[in-house]
Image 1: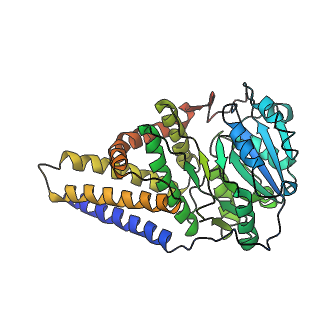
Image 2: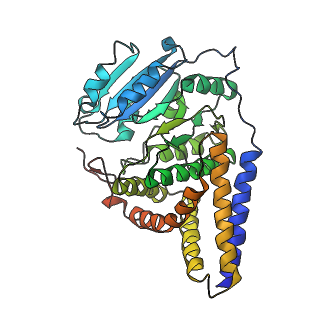
Length: 379
C-alpha cells in the first residue's frame, strides 16, 4: 500500500506541476488594443428552456455590449418552455432590434434538447461566427469585442472561453466556485496542448461554415446532454490545429451556482456522464484519476495516526497542489480565494466525487429540467 501511495503522490505532483507550468508560461492575450480590427458579423445563440428567472440579465448584458449592434444578431431558441421565457424575450425586441425568437416546438415539433435548438439556431443565423452562451449567464461588456479581436488575430475554427461561477456566501456555492477554477485550468491547458476533452457551452465561438462542415451534432443524438464536448470532439477530428482557448482576464462569462444540493449533484452527474458518452480516452482517464486521488486521500486520513509517514505526505501534497491550482486561476481572473473555505472543500470532495462518479455511470437515470438526458423519446 505504501508503494501505491508513493507512486500516486509522485504522479499527482507531476501532473499538478505540469498544469501550473503550462498556465504560467502561457502569455495573456492583449485584445482590447486591436484598434484596426474590423468587426465580424456574429450570431449569438442562446438555447433556453424555462429560464424566465434569469434570461433578462443575459439580455441586459447583450444590450450593454461595446460591440456595434449592427454587426451582431441574437437568436434565442426556446426549447419547449412552460413558463414565461418567450414573453420575456419578446418584450426586449424594442431595445434589441437585432433580436430574434425561434420556438423549437413550431420549427421541429418532434425534436427537443439543446443540440436540436443550436442546430436550428445555426440554420437561421446570418453570421460568419457563432457565439454560444447560456440563458443564465452574465457577460462582460467587451465579451463580443474581445472575441472578435481574438478571432481576427488567429482565425481559429473553434474558440473555447472560460466560465466562472458567481461568488456567494454559502458553503455549496463556494465549493462550486473552487471546482470551477480547477476545471477552467484543466480545460485551458488541455486545449493549449491539443488534448481536447473539456469545454463549456456557455462560452463557445465557432465559424458557422465549420459547424456545417462537421455536420453539427450528427451522430451524437442519443443524449440530450453534452452539446459542448461532442462538438469539441467533432471539431478536433476535422480541425485539430484550429482550436484555441482565450487567456485574457477580461474575457469570461459568469453563471450562477446551483442553490440546492440535489440540483447540484444532478448537474454534475450530467456533466460527468458526458465523459462516458463521448468515448474519449482523456475524459475517462481524468475521471478515474480524480476519483482514485480522492479515495486515496480518504484512505490516507484513516491511516494517518497509526501507519506510514507516506500517508501524511500524500495528504499534504494533495492539499498544496490543489491550493496552487485553484489559487493560480482565481488570481488571474481577480476572484477571491479563501484558504479556510478551500480546506473545507478538500474534505467535501471525496463523498461528492464518488456520488457523482457512480450516478454518471447510469446516464439513462439522470433527469434534467424534467427530461431524461439519455432517451429516444421526443417531447
